[in-house]
Image (cartoon, rainbow, N blue to C red; front, top):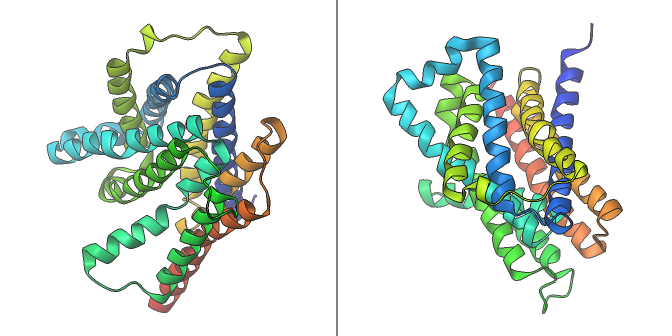
Length: 303
């Protein structure tokens, strides 16, 4: 029988890999097929939400509808659908649209630094030494990433930078907001319903049927990959990995997302990544490793 830990590690790698490939595919759709981020986000969330909700009903129908039996939790779920799920999806794809998949994905990994700053003000406590190191690494990495080592110039479009920073903020909200819901109802119902609610609302607001792009067979394939493999299966694999390994381990393995996005962007989209931005990306991703190490050390001391 396969070692459960090895299975968990494999799933925790495969999910982020699919996310990274999905981001690169989205960039191709934006630049080559001229599909807008608004349209892709609407379709991605709506269709993936339907598939995840159906998967939830197929595996545990009672758990899938449990959240709707408690009106306070239902309101929290709807709020998360807009402020957490929809906002994080939208800002991420806008960052890709105005920048590129590699930098947008790395910006997403600034969220631990944003969470540190938020908790520092909320708790009114000075940050720990490991948090100060993480913030310094994140700041240095961001400067190198957006300037390519030339501190007087901005090496990425301003809108790409702003949407990238917005991605870090919304990813932090996405991480912090649904904690109680996830513990009470499980990840698949919460993620599935929030995607479906956000996608349906976004689709009505944007009216995707009035902005339907001209599709080729390749476009159908690329959009299907983003929706099915880059969203539904990616979430399922990553969430399932948490049944076998610790969340701290899974968060470190999440670094495979920017790794795959960067490599594919360089190979297929001609994105150049020099030494300064490479170091910057490593510093930003390193904050995840440091925070995970600190969490594991803290858990060991408690036990």
